[in-house]
Length: 396
Ligand code: ADP
Image (cartoon, rainbow, N blue to C red; front, top):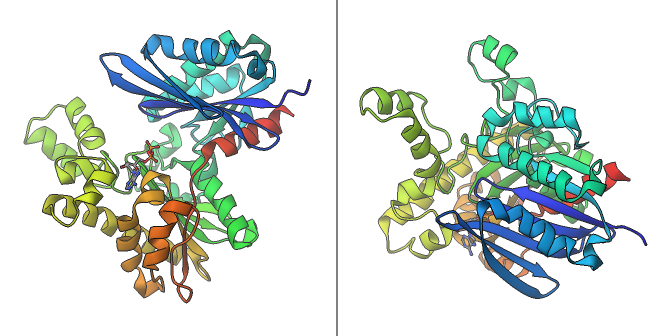
């Protein structure tokens, strides 16, 4: 029997996506999502072929249930499983490629917990449980780092203008995130536009609950908006993006707000939620853009910031810019955000095609600008494909 199935584990800050992928054709046999419900209860939803299931579980029961009930008891699947791919959010400067997990790699992932506390701890729990429940696959677990694709960023871009010692001694610098998604859309754009990766100059916008943008020159990332942590850069669902760091001292010294609460404000109460005062759900805000001035403001500030980043990244391309690419829940679905952003880039030669921009929400993939415009397109993100590909390459 040829073993060809890969289990993919993708922990977000508040959710777990899992899937079983056939490495021969990238077909997803199982896709699943586990999200917080209430009072330590989580809902696991999963789809096998075309059947959909769901169940409520306590946090500590989640992985056991997924591994035993959904995977190991399904002999057709578990007999063909030959490796496990783990998305790891922070690998610091140590990894520009994916690696097979061993004790040394585990220690490195531990080392970067302080840079991605919400993520790296969950990744380690995922790895230890994979070892426990799939002992035969012990040496077949692969770490695929979100920071790896951004390791090509030059020093002039990743350094903060802080005392240099903070970089030398503590590695405080910009690392970026969403690298797996930016890498995926870079490869897909290369295929779509029929331009070799080594000649491809694009700006990729990953807009979901977390938002980041990357400047890709000759197929390599040369700048990205997220920093030491995923808080820097664009406006996001609940994260503030770039702010004057002195705001933190003001909140602390003059308003007496505790550090823990300030952290919560910047990460959980800002962004689209903070500006709209009601919601971080872009669907909801977009629907009410015309009749609610606060919602309008939230989207206008979001798009203004995004276009400023695109404008500044376009000068990094020197000789040519092949495309601006939108991906992520907002990038793939928000007709309004794509339109407002592209409209403010007329000066750079981008002209939205309103019909294509609306149609793309149904066909999901393709160009949204006029034929005489520079190109902007939508490519749905699929991080699992990159994780499966790297896992397959390393294990084989
Ligand atoms: P995550 O970063 O958690 O993976 P997603 O990529 O799923 O997030 O994106 C979630 C965002 O996408 C939410 O703000 C949601 O409102 C937005 N979104 C999803 N569908 C639509 C839609 N049809 N129109 C506008 N925004 C949408």
